[in-house]
Length: 210
Image 1 (cartoon, one colour):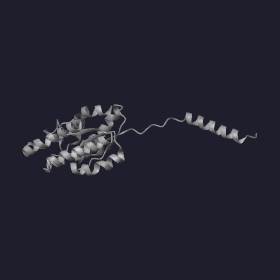
Image 2 (tube, rainbow, N blue to C red; image 1 turned 120 degrees about the vertical axis):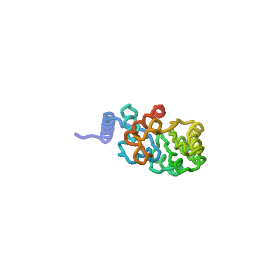
Image 3 (cartoon, rainbow, N blue to C red; image 1 turned 90 degrees about the vertical axis):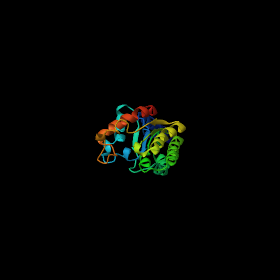
Image 4 (tube, rainbow, N blue to C red; image 1 turned 135 degrees about the horizontal axis):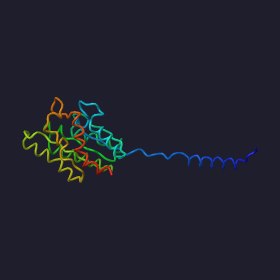
């Protein structure tokens, strides 16, 4: 049977429309939740699937929060190192939610409290500038650091209030005084402690997911 060019063009267009209507809709990739921390979040000394960010990914799935958890934490990282990394990381992952868990190494090394405040404020500000919701995770150091320990602890609340962001007062609340939750170095939490860390973070984190 002879067909005319105009009819063939119409027929092809009609078939394409029908096929597209039958194709399953494409799903957008889930938004990213970024964990931006140090060894306490990098899972130092543990299997990666045992660290609290991995447990967080499982909890999000169980609770039907559709996020892709990306953990860019680095052991030994300071707040100054975080400042140097935050822009490239934000550009690469475009996160919807950012957990900032830095500062422990600043405290243990006795670095400037003023620098810590400025660095954390910069990191939080850059994330907020990319329309991410931020959870700032507080740290503490032993009281034998004296007045420095008090100033150090206060920084996290100061930054959270100034930047109007969510805050967890102390990442290791509930486990810090119990040696059974720490590895032999007495600094890094064990696998058994990871779920407890997540429990500490979760009440402040969940409202940011909705």
